[in-house]
Structure formats: structure tokens, C-alpha cells
Image 1 (spheres, each protein chain N blue to C red):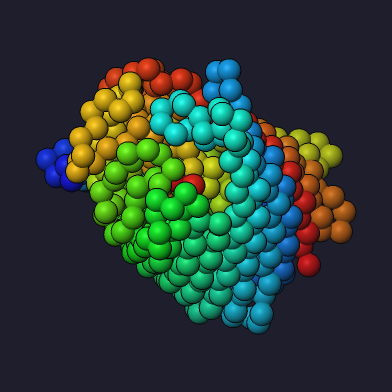
Image 2: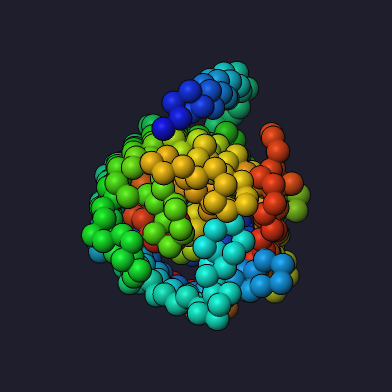
Length: 385
Length: 83
């Protein structure tokens, strides 16, 4: 869960005339949830609520075979409770069906037996605002037939007197229980603790940067019970460094959004993620935001190349899960949004994703794995109240 | 566990962070933080880092279920059987 601070709306109101244009106001209404703004700098309670409904249609495939299909409605609400208190809640329901890999590109559904599963996830967060600071406490639950996760989070944000810099501190944890339907994992546990520190700095009237460091330590069951011979370490440490930069370009009223994440985990995998998006306001309340993402990862130290089960040795860590192989991936996407009367807005996002082992940068990709593709469509309507 | 293999990338990461902080410190001398009356643009939704929290959750869930990397965007989201 992102450290969300739905605060900037009130702050925006008195300051907006400096740059406010008709198109930017419409963009503001259409492309984002005005009340649901994570405040990079402001620590002020929101003065309006917002709710949003989304519907996700997701599908993925490999050459010659469809894999998973996911249909997922979701709901989000932000409600100010007082001048200094705000509540956020979200609910997601995933319905999944299709085939997932047993090992490498060999699918579980190839015999005609598809996989079906459901996931219901919800989270709640309460934020209390002070002068120049905010503190949040949250809880989350995610439930599947074979997996239950319960999590909590505590966040604090403190701004400097000029409100141009905000320090963020986060602490969270989760307790998960795994009961695979095939009986391989019975009442297995996984517990995780996470720590985050971050800083957000306004560089100028048109540019802002944020950099966060996150550490996570987990202990328990990490193997995939549905993949034969899959044997993973019973602890996982993750280090992530995320830096994001937003720049408004007054000449075109557009906004450039850049992000970079470095991540290393104790499974031996290191990844780099670069994202860029260009938000362009258009006439009549429309806006368009094309985006591109590049991701590259090295393989986990215990990933073994095909053929299955080469490299397996009883008692040693082993996986043939291609998600832990070495590969690169591109996503291209576009969001179209439209501001509607009475506080309503609608948005449509399309993404196309492809993984290929030869797209890895910084080393060779894992041999003999098929390209993997996915596309998803995300439709949303929102209203402020 | 692969301690020897794990240490090298972590060292690289620390080196990258130190380098970035040095660059940021050098940049501090030149950037001009806005005055209170110059913050209209920064307050616009598209200048926030997660303007649509629901979309951010969904996108991150998709990537987490298809890639080795997970995390970095906040704490307390909880796990799932997807990875």
C-alpha cells in the first residue's frame, strides 16, 4: 500500500490561480481523484470525499497458449471525518481462471484442467493531520482459497517550516497463512516486517522529486506449492530504492513523470525499473497520458535453466519458476480521461506488456524460455462529494 | 543462501545511493524551492506521486505477480498467493 496522504486538495485551492487554466483544471478533475492526492508536501486534511469504481480486464499468454484471465472490480473511498481526520478504504475482488506454469512454460491447464481462483482484498487507513505533520495507521486483508494475508502499516510524515521538504517514515508488517489446495503446503506461515524512510523535495515551482528506501524482512514459507520440486529459502530480505520526479512544462501544460526503482533481494535477484509518462491536457475536458515502462531482472541464485528438472538436488534450493529467471520486460500504455459534470470523471487505461529473456540489460537472459505477454484494460469512474 | 552473491549488488546499490545523494547535494546549491505563492502547480493532481491510489494498487499487484521484484512503493500492503 502506498503511503497515501489525501491532503493536497485544500492546499491547491488558494494557490491554484497562479497557474490555473481551464485545461489544467479539467485535467485535474479527469486524470486523478482530486481528494485522493497523496500529499508530497501538504499536511492538511482533505475537505472533500471521493469514491471511485474500477473494472480490470486482464489476459496473458505465451506463444500458442492462453494463460490466465482475470476480471476484477474494485472500489475506493476517501471520506474526511473532521478537519483533522480522514478515512480511506479500498476493496478489490479478483476472479482468475486459465492455466499457470507448472515449470518453465509447461502449463497446468494443458491437460484441459484449468485453474480457477478468487481473491478478495480490502484495506482501511486513518490519517490524523497536525500542523506540518500527518500520521496514518492502516490495516489490510487479502483472502484466497489457499492464502490469507493480514497486514498493518504505520506512517508518519513531517514537513519543514517552508513546506518544501517532507520526510516520511513507514513501518508495516504482515502475517500470512498458506494452505494449498493440493495439500503440499498445510498451515504454513510467512511473516514480514517492512521499514521505509523517504524524502520529498520541491525543486522549483514546476518540479518535485521523491526518494524512498524500503527494507523488508520476511520469514516462513516461500516455495510455490503448485510447482513440482520448488524449494526456496525460508527467509527473504528485500531492499528497494525508489526515486520519482515530476516536472510540469508550462509551454504545453503537460506533465512529465519519471520513476526509477532499484531492488535487490536475498534470493539473489536484482532488478531495475524505469517508468516515464507524459500527461497531456486536451480540449473539452479530455486528457491523454501515454506511458512506457522498462524492467530488467537477474535470476534468483537457485533458478535452474531447462530442461526440467536439471540442476535439482534434494535438500538444495531449486526453482523452475520463470518469474525468477533473468529477463527484461516492456510495458506501453495510455490513459484517456474525461472530466464530466457534477464532480464526475471517467478514465480508461490500456496496457500491453511483454517479457523476453533477450531484453535483459546487464547480462544474459535465461535461455530457452518463451516470451510472455499480457494486456489489461482498466476502466474507472470517480466522483467527488 | 547466497551471501557472497548478495553482498556485491548491495554494495553496488549503496554506491549508487551515495552517488545520487552527492548529486542531489550538488544540486541543492542550484535549485530554487518555491515560495508559498508559487505552489499552485505543485498542488495539481498530476504533480502528485500517486494521484490514483486504486490504479497504483492494481498496477503494482499485476507486476508483483509476474516479476521477481516486489515492494518499494510503501509498507503494509500485505502478501498474496500470486507470487
